[in-house]
Image (tube, helix red, strand yellow):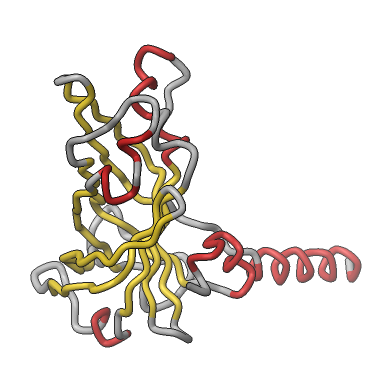
Length: 198
């Protein structure tokens, strides 16, 4: 019996240390040869670093692929790189939210794509869903019930995507809906690559 309790305690402590990373609903749209192309997937990740008061977004374009070449063709110019966005966001922005009280903040940060960093401003709307079905209070921190909605456009020329095979020229639209935050713990910093230290 003591051995069982010891093993159960060890398993509980081990599981509490492991961080499950929650993804966010992501929509991307581009125009290729006058054809509108779009994809939806849970392929973006929002992180908040309390130590530096920075918000991070990571998008994995490769995860949007369906496996069918005819559908995925337009994504080929995007899948060789991750998209990162990094911006300062004070912790106070997460406080005082409710189902009927949201906050919209302007994030003045930098966006990384195709090996290039560019300044980027994004309007971010924060709200909570504390009494709804989508409440995800699993980690017991300030950010568990906070959701985010935001969108932005990327000019392919700014990131030299227009020089790739499909010569994307028109804006690429990205939208995050009901984005969910992950508290950035030390063992997850590697997921942000060079974006963390940039």
